[in-house]
Length: 304
Image 1 (spheres, rainbow, N blue to C red):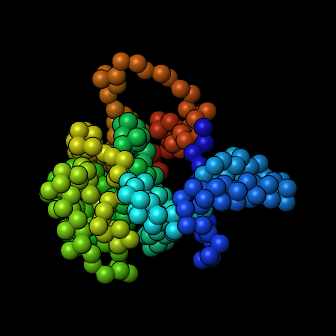
Image 2 (cartoon, rainbow, N blue to C red; image 1 turned 90 degrees about the vertical axis):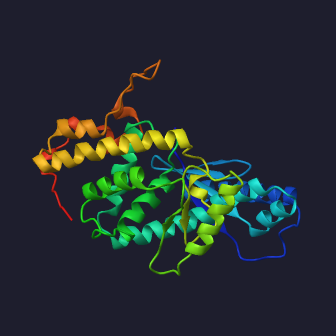
């Protein structure tokens, strides 16, 4: 199963859009069917239309096309379906703005993208991927690069990974939100702190509250997790990984065996284990190549 790449489409404002949710849904479905036919007939692409989107298959990738209509979100709020409105806002509003922000950080910091991939691989190795969304990991790594004080910004992905671990297990998530600032936008600390305190009093705040310039009063990228027990588990792994990593640096031991320890978790708590062939997994890290076969001697250390 290939994870689809989300593509948001937005049309110019038009009075042709109806004022009822069901009618808007039917209109969007009609557009998906027409779009699927045109892409298939004119460009010979494999498309699969659905009620809420259309999937386009290109060279092993799947692009999921969805239409954003602002009126739909306003109608959900008016009907008291706030949760559905927030989910729609995250998918069609916050996600595109998030990717724009991450693209800017990646363009400004040459090692950022590699650092994110390492952090995602680390989370996957320790069975944390279902609880930490990719967007959550990207924001944590963006904080490491944009707000590195008292250090300088990382110059290598490996130092960034160590800072990622340090942030994860030393930040007091229960007492304050993490403010991922942007140099191109004004501070939003007051709005984020107010929202965090309100959710805390209502006991609705999650284990992590990541506030950003595009969404200062909520934490949409952590709505699906992690919960507090899983955050504590991640903090335990992060602290242990950082300890091993710092020891590797002190001893200049950048061999494959030492790296395997950072990306290996205990399987004793699990009752059922299934061995899969890595080379056949579409999301296998490093193209299915195990860490033991990577040329770890070629790694360069940059201590900031």
